Length: 234
Image 1: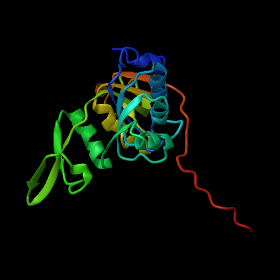
Image 2: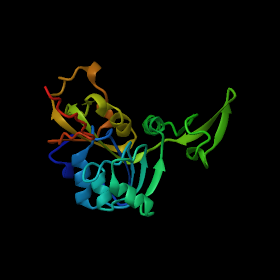
Image 3: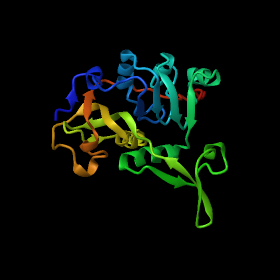
Image 4: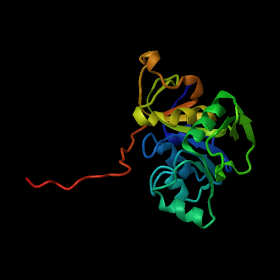
């Protein structure tokens, strides 16, 4: 099966539909599938439920889909740095399902592993636990969290080979692998496509069996919070 596509738009052709659930990789501004997000905006697909660690920032990442009002619900851990997100949420225009960071990662991983749910102590006694099944194990209370299975996963990797084996770079490895596995279809954008057989099998972070389509592109390198100190006088 040919997995390499010439553009993000081509890689998403026939995949998008209104009301779908999308799992998006990325951590802060690191490892964001920015080309695929831009293609989704261009396609105008609406009423999206998006599961992602964060919601991007104003004008970048998932923030561009919030600006175009294409997202109806976010499933996230961290939603700072985005004024438009805050405005839509506080005005009741956007649904939000908060997840502790580890819980969100495990919900994605479980979805990719075919595990429908799991028990965790994280969130017990907080609003996170409201409406969820509670169960005691060894004298401690846990809550049931359901796995996430998305209609589409969009991820960003450093390198790929034509069969879809992926290598992520540093922090981009946090949420991209579990996000990739939990989608019924996974589309990956990458910085480089290398010849088949050139990747060390021990260095592959995600096997190609999880990846259905690949697109190579140029990516913007952003710093989420630039902190500098004043120049010291000599």
